[in-house]
Length: 114
Length: 114
Image (cartoon, rainbow over all chains, first blue to last red; front, side, top):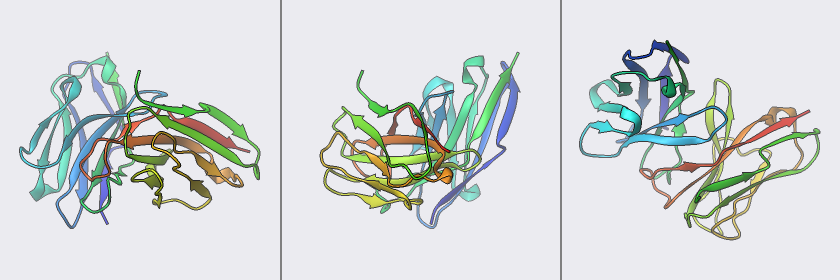
């Protein structure tokens, strides 16, 4: 079965600093990988996803992630944090045959300080 | 605005009572899902439905049941609530069941069982 590990349940960065949220996955077959964002008291919305093809994926709000098969990683980055980026971020994985049953990580709460 | 509507937004429920969480989508998506979100555990799949008339069990189905009588509605029922079912419940949908398809989430139902 596939799984996801998010390193760091809480990350704090200064406004304008680099954002790096870590995600490692485990899967015996090629995975599909996702990052979702959850703002306070809201549902999740898709930031970006990797299915096939280009390993560097660009998403909304200036976020991007790179699929590295050799490292089984899919870390999320943003060059310059904004106060509005403060939220909880979830990495998720699915594989063919599981009918879109996403397996989520435990989440990383991003705090952005002045 | 098209999307997923969940009701109620929050509920305090006495243990042993029956409760149905409602979920309606107007995007004509074929696949629908119920997740529960618990601190430190991320989101876990309770039940899913790939198309109207079919349902399946997810990771944590015990104590919950679902039905999918039509495309738009996917209610989740707790037959006899227990305190361990205190959680935030999210309904989601995707256009088709498939490992690489985006899931759209509702705003969530915060349920407290006392």
